[in-house]
Length: 230
Image 1: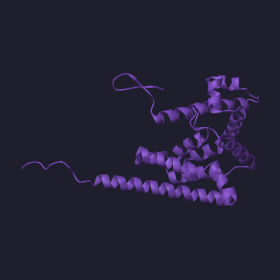
Image 2: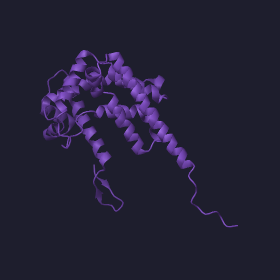
Image 3: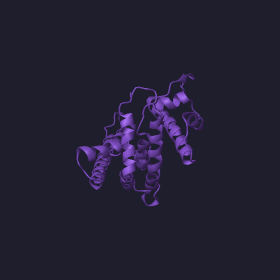
Image 4: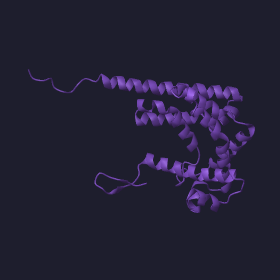
């Protein structure tokens, strides 16, 4: 959505705002498909577009094929509940480390059917043109979940440090990480889960150490002000 500049004219949305808007639009489309599927029907593109309050063209900007949308919606419906339970667990509310661990475990506790669907989703999206208007085509839920798990730490980092940590964690959890663990490293489910936990904790600790070091350095910078005259 355009924003007003200091001069009162309409300024284009910033890069981060555009990415967030794309995630919201994609989420609205998928949520509409999930709701229609849950109601017991087999929705059409027109049905989903109407429920999401977008055009058919917008649906196809984000999902080149309707099968991709249906698989994405099914994967979301099957994985959402376990992740949300991990993120709203009252025993971890004040412990971000446990929140991140709970998210990692929830994303790795998948049934064989859900893993098959996840692999299908990756296959359908891996060749997509990243420059098209509907990107990002995959991972929007993962980004939101990671940001939610890390939320208590956000004020301790600069925007750049925060963004880097979120993106780094997105590389070590989720479908791509699971496939690399199974197919490249030959790990079983338990070994892969522990590897992702180790990697996630290492990244969080490194990011917090860097953020703490930066604050400490800034707090001890020599003053450039002149001493008061006597």
